[in-house]
Image (cartoon, rainbow, N blue to C red; front, side, top):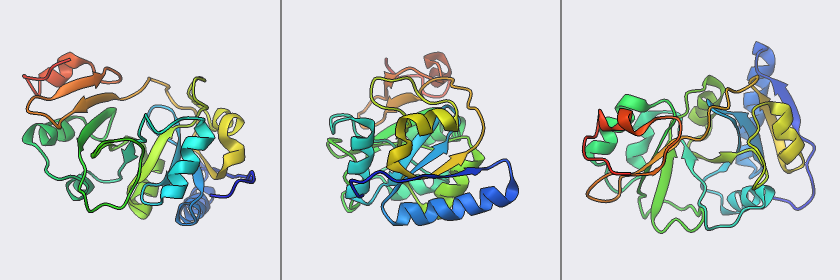
Length: 219
């Protein structure tokens, strides 16, 4: 990442030609270590190559956020998860099968061979498969991306591309406009690194729905 502000190119993804051009531009931007603003199934996100430390550092700086809150990773296919983690507990598999794509983030031990630095994660990674076609199309082409909500720390999450641009536009190279987001709130986070799954944050998926799949889950 460079320190100078970038002039982001915005693409209206409701137009098929602009969507194709926007995805091409976003793939190139991610490969260059730049940031991309994109829609997810809840709010707009800011994305960086998960395996480029300088890009993740740039993402944290853009949000004015420290390393104490590691950046989650979004994936484009559920099958990608197995290649990112040390082991995939059966409970995590069941939760993923039930709630992906959607508002569930799973915390697992990441494979030590992965060359990434997402913050002070202490050997774990928070992974989600979003329920958004534009985001997933991009993720299928780039591979896993470090993605956080497209807002400055402490400010409301962006539910439109314009709101994302107003907060983080100078730091991004490409903006993918997928229309207004529902703003249904953050994902539910479940820690699957211990013997019993534990809810770290209640969000889009309530605990009772989780317990229908994992009866021993704690909160």
